[in-house]
Image 1: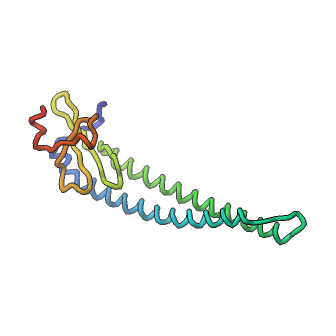
Image 2: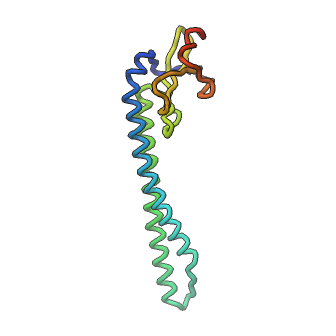
Length: 159
């Protein structure tokens, strides 16, 4: 795979504080939406349970009224749940786009796992970073993934 942009180690390290802050901001924004999503989902499930328990008969106006009320509440909460789900998706896509348009490969937003494409001669490799790392200290070949990451100290030995 050819990457649209490649970075030197110095370029990646210079960009890292900005990208790190973006990942932290993204995780904070996503977490806030997830909190709302959980609350709205609980409300939706409650309305769903209430609707399922309504007993109606054709000649009982009170039970028909209760059914209409429960159905309206269910529809309202369903619409709210859908709106927050869309907000969650939009937020994720926004941050994914902001980070990847810089030429960075975003692997996992919660852990901040990212790769900076790099190359040495004709060989492409990835400078690997995640939030718990102090700095960019690892690299791996494109097909090796996170599990195949190696310390930067052995990069010159590999090539």
